[in-house]
Length: 555
Picture 1 (cartoon, rainbow, N blue to C red):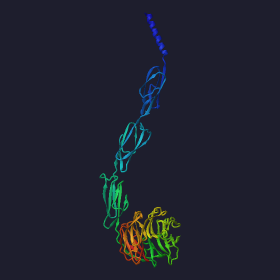
Picture 2: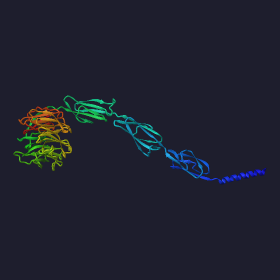
Picture 3: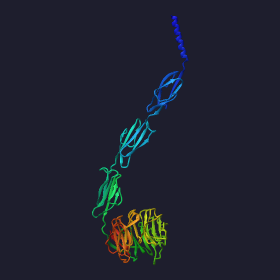
Picture 4: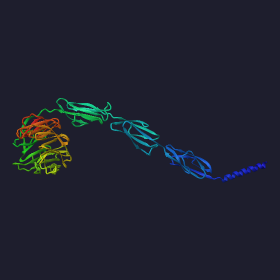
């Protein structure tokens, strides 16, 4: 019996030894991609053939397991690998991503700026700067949701799904009103969605002058002379209504004799003390308000226009006829008129000039003459002359010029043989001109623009209001015995004067006044002005050239 047991034991040991010696051993290697994204357990090992090994992928913070690659595929985790050969498997990981949902309350938008990185969704740890951008008339109030506070811009770090709302509220504004002079402002809200003054609210303002005062213009955050005026609120505003005392009727107060019998054509006063007159063979200057006059030119030429830029620099245009034998052209003084030098000679009868400063000015006259200087008269450029502007051989005569600035200017006159009155316009300093008004009738003698769209002109016995940048006019004054509306001047853009005379009786002249920029005119009761031809405003007085005399008129 003992022998039998020993035999069985020996056989079993021999069988086991044979099995171990015949089994294959295989190696398992694991990897992680990216390397710092996680780990795999077991990391490696040796296993008998047929062994089923369970591998488990563990993601580090901010990463998520996405699948296996290599000798095992799929996304099951943990996964079972049968060891029937050497195996190498890689656990794949991806950065965890979250959605960021943005909302708005009110009217506005949110701008996103990525501080680190961005894919279609935000990876964990991404820092996003959010900027709340209110629409016009709205303002940012606060953040709500996964972001709080009122800082703008603000940064949010993505570590989970995020939902952020930017809250906007409609802006409200403060409107202040004030007056300069005597009057009040009446306010009426035309349209508003609330009782507060919000963006887009339309308010009508009416300037109401006190007795003896007139409304002049708006200033502050609005401008112009429209009254009433509608204002659309787009921010805090200050509305100012400007009033001035209604001028008392003017009266001729003092007559001054220049000491010459020459008929005067032009008067130009820098103040109520210092002034010049020009006429038939005469330039004279006063420094004591017309009491005494010094002759600066006699008997050479006929002065058609005169403008002093300051007490030293000035220009005149001159022509010759009859007994006058001087040079026709443009003259300049740089010493207050003690000397007048010819700077441009022409036979085209220069009639008018206009300087905006001591360097830049224009001269115009008959036979299409338009000249410009930009160096104080040293050199002159011939500008567009309009020959054939209407398809024929017309000749243009410009009687007066007016410039708003170095670019925008107008000229008034007429053209023949049609003998139509016309107004020309430039917006490039005279490099090009266009005819903006052409109508049958006598020549326009003067033009004065009170703003870029409106002004005053005169022809024959009539004075016209100019509209639409001189493209249209409307009759505002007709005097029964005007032979010619001669000249116009303005103290402010609303308060001005016009003078006309009767050529059938040269001792008759008529002075009119406007306080609404030429809309209406009232005759000023004065002593007979005897053929007044030119007017200008010094400081407190209106100065009139009438015959051989100068008249100071109280305004």
